[in-house]
Length: 308
Image (cartoon, rainbow, N blue to C red; front, side, top):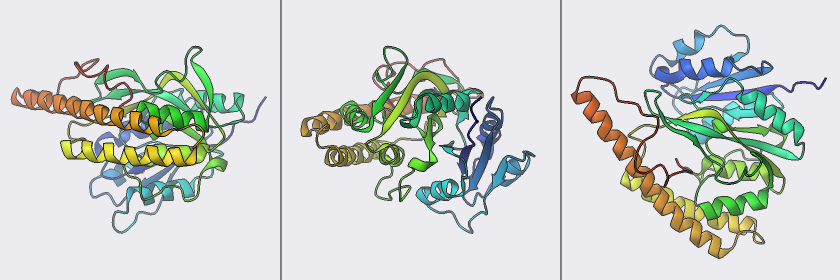
């Protein structure tokens, strides 16, 4: 029988009292039990601390809280620095794991020893937990079998041409701690902090992608304004150019131009989705009830398959 590696789940949180109970419950409720949960509270001013302390589980380790909030880069870094597991995952305080998420991804990395990273699809939910999109992410990477081993250079080209982070948010990704880059996070990148981190972790090694939905990523109607959409598209353009420098034999100037154009279109489509969510929330409040939830939002999902 193979030895189950220790998995460190890092939960960075800032004023997350509303959704943190569900998040931590999903992490501690994993069918895979050999894990530690490292909570990095970024000087929350709400009842986040009380929520954390309500989980009387020996696997939970709470890091000392900074006097004042630090940058997102620094808070994620201090969580990963404290992790002791062979494998690591970051789960933001409002996201949710399926019960088999860790078990499935550990199995993928054990079956594919050349892979340093495993990524899955995710469900997109709204602030109330309603499902907006049942399965998103990875594009066509896993086809036709549902699981695929892919090299770093090919992955860089796929993300560039798609104009998107195909691997998705951190909750859907599990990484070998031995592959973590130094520094962990590059302060030059904000909107692309996660995918830039993934690509430096993978380097010229392999990733394994799987089409199963293993987590939920929560979106808010206030997440993206018109100005932020423009800033995000501009940063993606710089990031794709950076990938072309790192992988000159795989990522061409044409790929960068194509990805930049697609990134602009996807940012606007995502902004339209959030605007639609804001309108629904306003209508719901005017009627004196919670925001409605739908299995899918309408109008833009086909356009924003790889977003947010």
